[in-house]
Image (cartoon, rainbow, N blue to C red; front, top):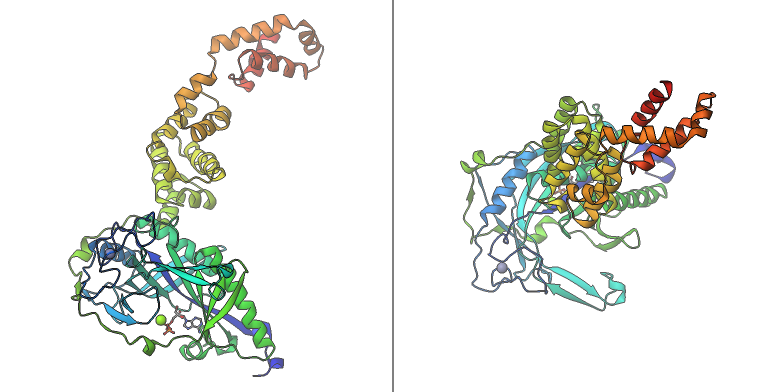
Length: 496
Ligand code: ADP
Ligand code: ZN
Ligand code: MG
């Protein structure tokens, strides 16, 4: 192929992902060391996760349960029996010189995940998802901290042995934005399952494979043939740690490869490193081949049988199903439904409120007021643990007309989040309780008596004079009366 023959429009971008997610368990996958962040490097280690001779791994039941949940959520086949293998390579983050992983019998096989990309639904096939242990982490020191420029490197084995799931997709993505949407959906699903914490540093790591192929290599159905995909030269971009970074790194890589092809240069099959601070991918080394890893069975672990247990493990309603149910049951638009299901905690809280109060009022309060104020403070609903009753009480105060919606939002909710006090105490301290009807009526009469000029103007046809009187009543009641009601009361009294 020559440069002249290749037009941009003839080319299709093909992307497939290998996503590593950290499973939330209390202890590591093959030993009893805690997975909590440690205060000091190399604090949460033992002979097993340091790979000392003679130590033996013991599989963590919690990690298997989490993996089964993931498998059910992505509609994967979970075989009755699976096995662990050793993947051999020599690198300082791996003290045993092999990683315990799964090879040809992974715990989850052939699943899928549906995502919406700009309104279009796409089903991304998941080839496999397997359990493995995380290596240690490296810290590059000096020389700007770059992997290729540092003066030396420190190693921390606290992370070694943390349970990971590697989720491998088919090369089904056709753009970086689809990848971003998929990763966001995947994170949501994993959080719903309670097996993943997106806030935890390094909990999501993505290796993204990208190639550019000619569109006329597609079969009649528009699908690219297996041979085309197999023979395309692809790069694997490593060091991607969020869905936003994935989109950026892949957009960069897509342009780099397209430019190379347009100039008639070949794209080399290689591993590249995403340099987040420079916003570019850099060549690392030629890609390993599977045979380089000399996989063989992990003889220290027996085959894993989940046949009966598998059926007992339950998963909650997943985000997509819940979004659709919310839209139908509470008559919500797409945006509100997606905000209200963004995490399981938000969705559960919304449903609690909607069962007690008007679902529309509850939707406004959760999707707009609460999430808006939390977002502004860089907080999550989980930061309100144990205080959701107080938020519910605030909504009750509004629903029963005890305080105005404006005061509830602008004064009470903000003070609750900033000061950690409950709603009733704030209403009391700020004197926000709605003034009784009697008091409002008295203030209306007083405003008419005290302001004869404004009354005369009104009676002479200056309708604007009523606003002045409303202002007087609002002042007298400390802003706690409803201005519309005051307006009506004034007019009624002036008509008499
Ligand atoms: P390897 O043996 O090199 O690891 P795999 O077949 O296991 O290759 O695939 C690894 C990843 O590469 C998968 O996520 C897959 O979707 C992706 N992939 C395969 N072919 C292509 C391609 N032509 N372009 C982009 N990604 C691809
Ligand atoms: Zn350990
Ligand atoms: Mg592979």
